[in-house]
Image (cartoon, rainbow, N blue to C red; front, side, top):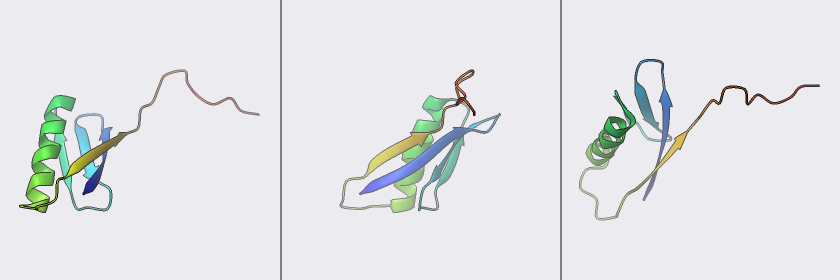
Length: 70
């Protein structure tokens, strides 16, 4: 089973939300967030016989990397 999780920084915490699943968690660091994602997915799906793969997708904003206009 593939579980897609979107990760982002809200200005205070690193956050993660399930894409198509009712999963949400957060952490102070990315390492803490990833541990919390594993725990949240495990709790959400409980005891499944099928292996779970977690795919995290992140939006990254780069300074000075704006698309040219006009």
